[in-house]
Length: 223
Image 1: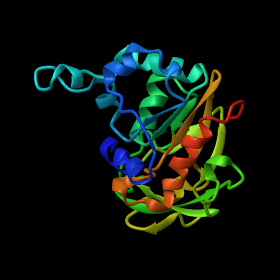
Image 2: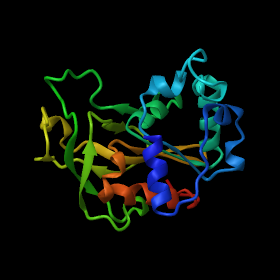
Image 3: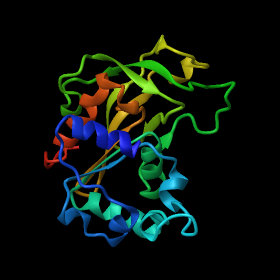
Image 4: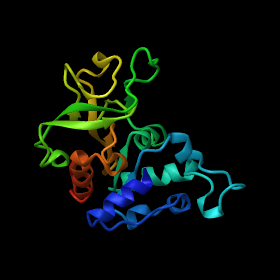
């Protein structure tokens, strides 16, 4: 989804810098950036990357231990990491965030949502949900359902009938669970988005959550 994210940023006039793994591994990120975005990608792909035998050196390898340490340092020094679905799973694991996936260990017969529109309830007083309706539709593709031990929950799944369109097995597993939150880390924060806010440049109703997260990155002293 990195390419789709660039497409959306360009469509709406956001200037950005593309980072490859070696850029992150070098560290010093807080000196250049207020916000870093980790779109959806499986954690092993972010962590380990592509083999050097098949890809040019600048695109081979993953973030590795050095990359995870550099991202954690970036946040601790006051940066904002914005991550969703697979990118958020990676951040939770490798940056050692006080967050768990509430659906971890469940079988497909317990819970399954392979590409569904679900309803969430937002705290529209929070800057990240600014301008959003209190009830919003989000794209959920067997996505992350974060269970937050330390942080602020901004969006939750309703306590009944979360499905708007598509296939959902085990809807009761989502009742009242978090969908969107911020997690403090040092002087900075991680915006954890469980769903896919810009899915294939089609989920325009939740672009605003991503854009607000970028603007929120320059608000100091808040989680």
